[in-house]
View 1 (cartoon, rainbow, N blue to C red):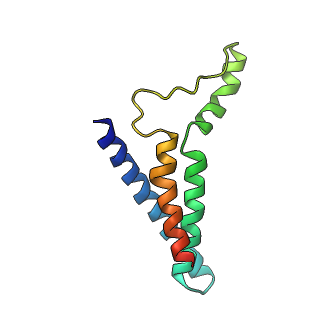
View 2 (cartoon, rainbow, N blue to C red):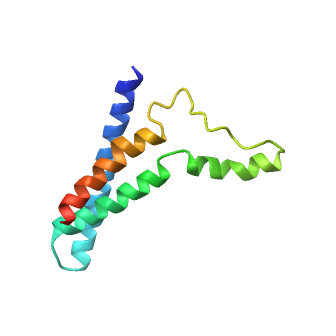
View 3 (tube, helix red, strand yellow):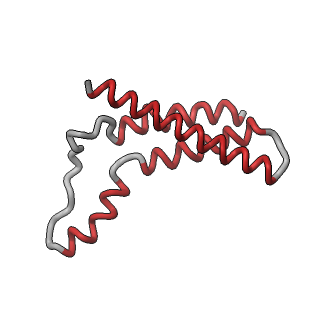
Length: 108
């Protein structure tokens, strides 16, 4: 059951990442004349990098570290929540890597 949920989550993240990259490439082409394909490839690579960096628990742990230190609690453990279907490694493998590969192919 968690596998289907994780794959569905990866598919949604792929679609949203591709839509953001298409929008950014469209704006880039509108501002500066040029080809859409190569610019789409570059924006896909950038989106894949951002998803790879921010798709895990780094941002949420960084946000709570100051408040946990203020309250005298230790750092959080690296254990994933049981409700999370797709962890940081899954986000990297199933979302960031495919976006980067398609971006590299389009960028030439």
